[in-house]
Every structure is written in C-alpha cells, then in structure tokens.
Length: 485
Ligand code: NAD
Image (cartoon, rainbow, N blue to C red; front, side):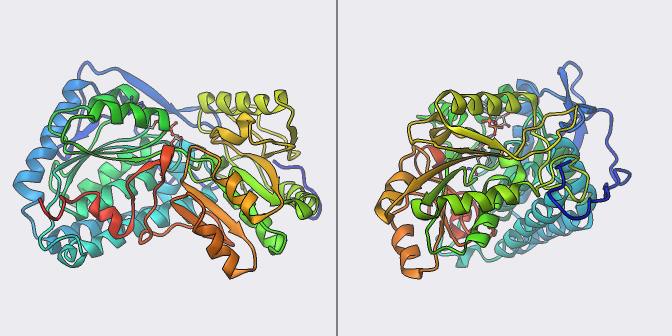
C-alpha cells in the first residue's frame, strides 16, 4: 500500500488461507485433550488487519487452571521426569519436525491472528521456533555434561505466560527448554493471539506426547494471575510488560517458586561516523520496523554521531518510502497491522506526547487500509533524553533519533534508561565495538547487525528488562534445580 517511490508497482502476491483450518471455538488443552468447561466465559480473537472474528476461546478460571496444573504435576511425577533424557529428546525432536512440516499453515495462522507480515512469520517466527525445539532436543540426553551438576533435576511444573508479539516463537522459547530438562508445562498465550498455541496443542497430540506434559490454558491477565499464583507450580516464566512482571514478582515473594522475567526494553542503536551507512540503514529498519516495532529488544532509540545525522536521515527516509505497509498475507508486505486497538491507542498517545514535547514527526507516505489497526513507519527527530518517546517503550513502528559527539556520550545516553535488554553498535573499528560493548548495560549487544537470534545464544535483560536468560546453557539452568540442592 506504500506509494511507489519509483520503478514498477508490485503486483499483489497474497498467501492463500485455504491451508488453515480454524475452528469456530476452542476449549482448553488439559491432560492431552481439549476440554470445554461448561460455564467458562468465552471471548473472540480477531484478525487485526481486517477486524474479522477468527474464533472464540475460553477464559479459563480457577478450576481450569487448577486442573491443568494438577495434570502437569501428575505427568511430571509419574512419566516425564522418570523418562530418560534420550526418550524425552525424541519427543522434543518430533515436535520440532512437526513444526517444520506444518510451517506454512502455522505461519499463515500466525499472520492472521497477530497481523505480522507473512514474510516474517514464514521466514523468522516458524524457522526459529523449530530451531528452538531442535536445539533443546539435542540437550535432553546431555544434561549431565552441561556443567550444571552431575545429575541435574527438573524443577517440576512450569507456569509459562507469554505475550502477543511472537506468539509461537515465545511458546517455543518457553516450552522447548522446559521439556528438554524434564519439566512439564502449563502455558497461557496472550488473549489477542491464542490460535497458534492451540494449534501447538494439536501438534502435541500428533506427536503422542504423554498427556499432561503440555497444557494450554487461554484467557486474559486474570487467567495469567491465577496460573502464576496457583499452588503446585514450581516455576513461573513470564514474558511481557515490566508492570505485570513486577506484579508477579510481588505475588511470588516469600514462596519457594522460581521466577524468570523477560520484560520490556528501550534499546539504543548507536551509529558512529565511520559506519557503513547503507548497511546501518538496513539495520535501523530491521531494528525498529520489523514486526511493526512490537519487539522487546527493538532498536527504538537511534543514537547517531552528530556529524553524519543529516546524511543518515536522508538515506533512512528514502528507505522508509520503499517499505510496503498493508495486508499481512501479501508476500510483498514489509509492515503489517498493529496487533490490537488497545496497542494502537498506546502508540498514538505516545506519538502525540512526542509532538506535544516538541519533537519533529515524519511518517513514511503510505495509504493505510480503512479497516484494521495501522500505524505508518515514523521517525521523531529533535528528541531529547527527557522526552517520553525517548524513555518509554512505545512497542510500535516509531523511532526516536538522538545525537552524540563522543563515544563516552554515546555510552551515557544509551545507558540512560531503566531498561537493559539490548543495544546495537555500528562502526568499522573492532576495538571500538569491544570498548562500547563492555560499557553498555544490556543483555544482548549486536555489532554491525541487529535483531539476530539463535537458540544457542542466551537472551535476557538487566534492570527493568527482567532477569534470567532464555536460550543456550544459561536457559537450561533456569529449569533445573541448583547443583547443590
Ligand atoms: P502484558 O504484560 O500485558 O501481557 C503479557 C502476558 O501476561 C499476556 O499473556 C497477559 O494475558 C498476561 N498477563 C496480564 N496481566 C497479568 C497478571 N496480572 N498476571 C499474570 N499474567 C498477566 O504484555 P503485552 O502487552 O502482552 O506484551 C508486550 C510486552 O512484552 C512489552 O513490554 C514487551 O517488551 C514485552 N516482551 C518482552 C520480551 C522479552 O523477551 N524480554 C519478549 C516479548 C515481549
């Protein structure tokens, strides 16, 4: 839908939805079967690009959550933790292969329920979700050699609560390490994106996973709270907003339950004057406009060395004019729909605060569809560190541009945030990369690239971005008893 800057127009290339079979309503997945609680309320999940209703799901209440946790407990004590790592690994491999086999269907479903471009769900979410299962399947029979104690033991039942920005990928980040280490799971997907988690429940059936090893309860924050506070849960793994993360931490204080929190971010993407500028522009675009900016580690604060800021902004604006905003199922689309009306409202309000505080707004010229939730790729310049758009997570396709003169100033500005999830450095000098990286207070630092993920590489934050790591050996430790216990 973006106005063509030059050259040939794109012919539409819509992905077919025929491969996807969505039920008109779903129950809750407990003990290997979908159950329909008689009196649980139901709510609709919609396609954010069209506002069409896709399906209805249950709002699980206390009885359903307790039943799911009890099923996970039984499965843990009687089957899963008693199974050899090699046997468990076979199941995890099977899930990985099923994700690959059904990748196209799941990618289309994800784009329909979430609004993200099919190009991203097909080329990023699905391959990475499968990679997480493959990687962790490989660990299942090698835990004795992971340097985490001689006979590392599972924790028990993991309550896992995930957000809507990468629904299936966040599920993979949570479920794969938990299963590989012998834990069983009760997972709650976000209320606006439950469908791929419910499809994953079908995959668990297809894989003959023992009943109760994976349970999926749908619902909003109330269900999440019931799950996090449910007796019988041994570990809570939460990915979502800092506000809810703090609430969960408070409610778990004084209990023996383990907790990991993957929360928000306000990453600095730092461009030095010796950076390859065209590559940096691609990194900036990937950093903040990927997945509509609904990315916890998005490079939402661009710090540019003052001497090159004008040149860089010309190139960046030119590049943004080529981004295609619109139908997520069109294979040409770069930027899809905002996930919900509520999220769009948040983005609009924060952008308006940028206008009110004196920053200069520029949006890529594009025609937005009439229905659905949309926000154009946007840049704010003349931003100061005190502005809300420089401090608060917008979680949308909005970039705040600040400048610096010296590396020291870049470090000071980059670290001037309560968050600490990620950062990017663009320079041709290796020594400067190392100097900067050792001073940036961020869990992940990318150099001359951005938003690269690998299951072997631990991911997590500092400060208000949470604690605990997902992925790699550190991610396994989060699901195992301490070596001394
Ligand atoms: P959110 O905190 O509102 O919701 C996240 C999940 O928590 C949802 O499933 C929701 O239903 C549930 N929830 C809400 N209230 C709850 C409560 N009181 N108790 C238990 N569960 C509750 O966040 P969101 O708006 O869905 O997601 C966006 C946020 O997630 C952003 O801040 C983003 O940065 C963060 N995020 C972080 C990472 C990471 O790895 N650090 C990854 C993705 C998203």
